[in-house]
Amino acid sequence: MWVLAFCLLSNDSLQEVMDRDRLFSESVSTRQHELFASLIHENATFIGGSLLKGHEAVVNGWAALLAVDRATELTWSPKTGESSGDLAYTIGDYLMLQKVPEGEPTRLEGEYLSVWKRTGGEWQVIADGSHIQRIEGVSVVIESDRVSLKSPKISSSETVQIQTAQGSELGFAVGSYQATENEMDAHFMVILVAAESGWQVRELCLP
Image (cartoon, rainbow, N blue to C red):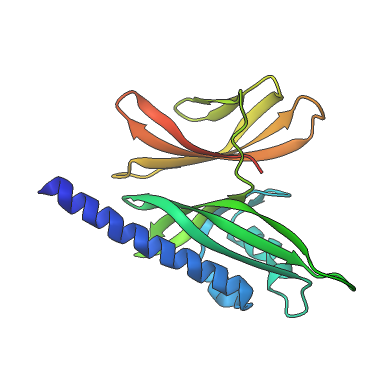
């Protein structure tokens, strides 16, 4: 009985998160600045071309995408995810159209990963990244207070943020790493799931 009740509650929570994710996309496509800001957690970390850490940094960093005269159109839609306690994540497809003076817009499409945290009864985005990659030969080392990447293609990595929630079987970590071939800084995000042997990796996002 309790297992069934937990499953039903998790399914309901995931549906709430999926709906919030669609609303998140709508806030960008319809240029609703206040709605967008209300969906960002105060401790949010967004990775991509640069690292945006904190509510103000994320809102300011995305301001150009919400501008009325913007040349870029961005939409996305969740297709799967998981919810446990006050943490959840969604994975979906995004489409970015970059307008050009002449001809068809430039298309950029792929997968994204968003982590959600319920605060005060409302789900907000606490971590976000795009271009999910599953690179062969990359292993994730999980310790009590840090998550690192190990690979011949990666020279070093460090944890920027790691978080779990009481009563949740999910957790996440955001970090930075340097590629061996060019020593350029990049970022990663890991979805963690609780197991009898400790935390294990569910998803790895390497923009």
